[in-house]
Image 1 (cartoon, rainbow, N blue to C red):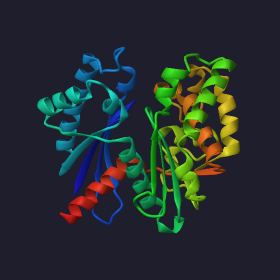
Image 2: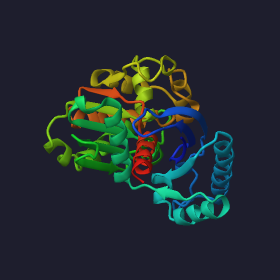
Image 3: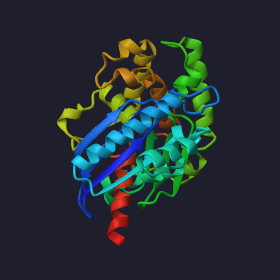
Length: 310
């Protein structure tokens, strides 16, 4: 059957259509996305401004037309931290339902970590043993670890690349003092929540997901996207240190000259790199294997499991 999932994130809204069957590898069939930047299109109280809500409703309408054209059998939609944390998030969700008929599932941070972990487990398989997953989004950082498809530990922290940039890194590029301050704040915030992951023991495999980590790995020399999802990619702690130093000396425009860095995400890549570096240092990870599957795929797999058991 064809499944469609609308992913409403902090940076982009993305419709992914896949050919999917229980027990089979979901095959991407169609993709449609826009950079809506919900987390940056807010009023002083953090609420989504009406013009951005208008664009969200209109884009979801476009997604419905595309899903129908693509023969989608089952369509679902979810939202992450940008809508979850907005004071008027429930109103926006109600408006989407009233005007498009789409019911948005608002995921908690723990949900995000769990579903991403499921995707990583299915991608790398049981032979990977105990997994530790690092997922850096626009609004939050998710960490999860465990032996099964359901993680033993799932942690979500307000350390997304977009959020840290917006709240802590105003300079372009930042000054040395700004960089030192945000580095210390990220590490203090992260260290307070790591005990459950550290006491679980070292992972057999540490994995990174998300656009931010894929971009950092590409800058460090990983294979380009065009070579396909099955080419092994990784990011080492030593290589990341070099990338952080490089990014710190560049403004957003200069960063777009680097491989796999888009104009829309260039301004927040340094913050994402600092969060990645803190995660690897404090969790004592020398290497992250990069997984092409993340939250969207985890939700598709969960949906398939549900449909198969219905």
